[in-house]
Image 1: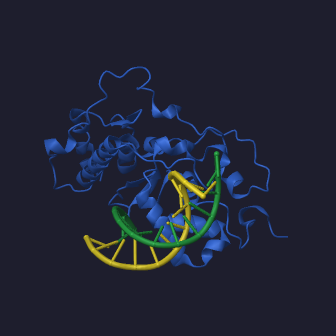
Image 2 (image 1 turned 90 degrees about the vertical axis):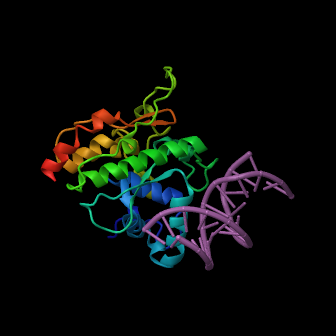
Image 3 (image 1 turned 90 degrees about the horizontal axis):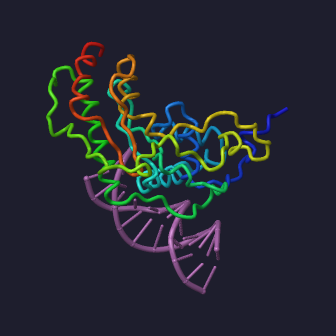
Length: 244
DNA sequence: GCCTAATTCAAAC
DNA sequence: GTTTGAATTAGGC
């Protein structure tokens, strides 16, 4: 007897936008980030409808990834060969689909210009750190490269609330989204950690080195990303060079 | 019906 | 693979 669940939409178009589908794929991954090819795979595995006309919907999905600030492009580590970058969810985008609205959001998630610049700065720093870790001959860091992002001026209790407090308004599981006809299991799990906590500098270094966390993670204050001061970062490369 | 998010097509990089 | 723009479709109020 065929199992219900995953493919319960059969060949029908699932009632999810590309943004929802992409978010589901990213959420369901252990690292909370996926390359484009894995996002495609997640969708075609679960929704037979998308096994046809792949060129059309995949182009649309790519458009969404670039166009929407809720998706963050994370540089691929050189020791993980493959095409393209990884895609993650912006941690502040978690309540995008509140009230179970997976078709059309009330409002588009759009970063303010300054927030976008700060984020771009962080990602550029990450890419440079990445290069450094995997390039033993490149043994010095240009000071400007690692200039820390200015911390929020005199952060108040309100503006220093860590990102870890951001949780989906309503807890749910990926399975319950995919198979709405099947009663959702009680969700005893913690909501997924926000994407930035997953790929912040510390876990990133941890992955690269296979060693305990050695530098403070990138932190996120309400609309502000803060990477560790340059002097803290500079302690890491020797360790990196030893183990890579 | 209006507003705007989502989708589509496609060019340029 | 990524970004962007323009045109069109369609959801939600």
